[in-house]
Image (cartoon, rainbow, N blue to C red; front, side, top):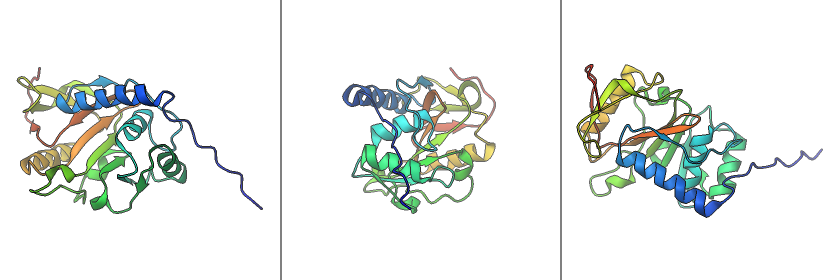
Length: 205
């Protein structure tokens, strides 16, 4: 018996304008680490990806990129959506991925194998998009460095102390290292590899 064809959910309804607005919000988040932005567009029904992770995928991924999905996100529906709307293929090898989408930060706890780039091409490292429950500019870690005037407090209940210790180690490898983008159902924030992290209790800006 022939199985019915799965209907692929709609992506951006106005590709040019929505992708431009989304790109600006992602670049603003990367330029101002830890600052929380409301996502300009949220795209539902992309398999297991949350609406803001889907916005990021539609904006940054194309036929020239490879995407890594963790086990919780790696469904046929998600892969079909990404392939149809971006042309990107998925890979099971995190070293080969330009973009990785994770259902939680726990996937980074331990010896992850994402591409850290190399000294000749540090920009070839993996950008990791992590779904989190919440984002806040109080308590948590204190961030400093490029894009932050003095310091900025940044926290999420989804990010453990072990994650932050690994993020410190990631920064120590700069200019190598992965870039992080955190996404809730409605917001996003970024932690580039250039951002310094202080885990001692302090008030940020």
